[in-house]
Structure formats: structure tokens, C-alpha cells
Image (cartoon, rainbow, N blue to C red; front, side, top):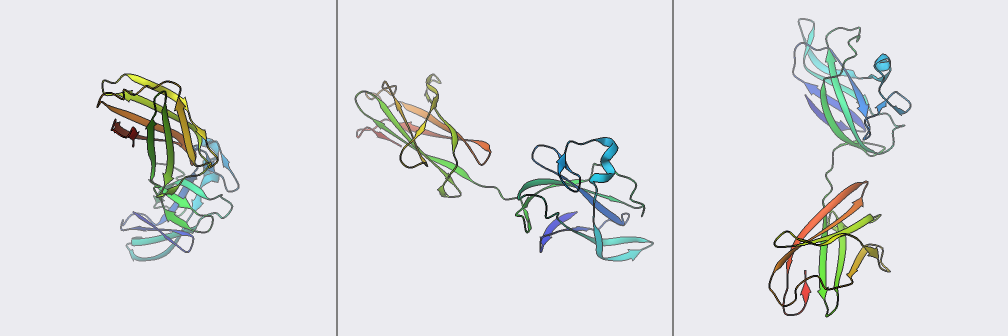
Length: 227
């Protein structure tokens, strides 16, 4: 089975010769299921009310069954934009009484107008360290798809040395005048400025509703700038 989108619709293609009818269920990120008006906790007794029917739009009839069948459905416009899981099921009987799960699951992105294949955003952090005589100054800027990320919460910083010893653990970073620039000043110098050791700096933050983590290996240099 293949899923594509067309003009805000879900379109499925299947070359099976035993299924005439197709339907699907919609789940949100919390595992709740769409009942036609809202996402609710799943109740087995109500499974028939969760079924989203589909229409056959093309296919060749072979002994009463469709081969290379196409099915479509318009995604419910009442559902907010976001990521969703759809569980697609098929059956032979016209009564559609099977009401079972166990079909083909797809993760989709609903824009509010169109159905799209899931988009994987790319996050990374630019980590910079400045060493002065009394403290280590850390600056972190998070990026989403190459652009500065916004709505960053719970930013923290961890530093370990090459032996695995923790030098800074879950330090809370703060914003500057620019909300997308995060800073942390370690009160005491934790990085040995007289050696050429390597360190791993890990930045973490909640962005887009999920925890993002990015690490960078750094080492001392003559200008006291790392990163």
C-alpha cells in the first residue's frame, strides 16, 4: 500500500486482489483517537465510531474484487494542524463490520489544508566557549532547518572532560537581549587552560514540543576561544 496526498486528500493505492473496501483511524501524538469531532481515549466498545471511511475511485474488477485499487478520503478539516498517525485497514465484505486495527500505519503532517508526507525538521546548536582568567563563558544558538530557532524552553548545558568526568551538570542557561541567544557563565574556570585536553559540551533544550540535544567536542587554543 502506498500513501500520497492530493488536494488535501489521503489517497491509497493497493494492488491486492482480495480487498474491496478501505477505511482508516486517526491518532494524535498522545495516542488519542479521532471520533469525528474530537480526540478521545480509545474505548473498544466505541471502535465503530472511530472509523473514517474511504471511497474507491479507480480499479479493475477481477472476480468481484478490485485489483490495483485506489481509495481516497478528505482529511477532517476540524483537526488542528500537526503530526498524526493514520492506521489504514481493508476488508472484503461490503458491510464493513470488521472494525479491527492492525492495518498499515503512516505518520502524516496535516497543514490544516493539505495532507503531506511527514517532514523531519533538522535541529543543531552552535556552541561557543570563551575562557577568561576566572570563568568559562558559554554561548549557544539553536537552529531549526538552518534558521535560528524560536520558543526555546528549559535550556541546559553539560560539560565532561576526556576521561568522562562531569565538569558542569545540567546548568540552566539564560537569554540575553536576543531571545534566541543563550548564555551561561561558569563561576569558576572548569576547563584547564594550560593543557590541550578535549572536552564535550552538550546543549539541551525543549524546542517544538520535544527535547533537542546537540554535542560538540572542543579543545583549548592559544586565543582562549573554543568553538
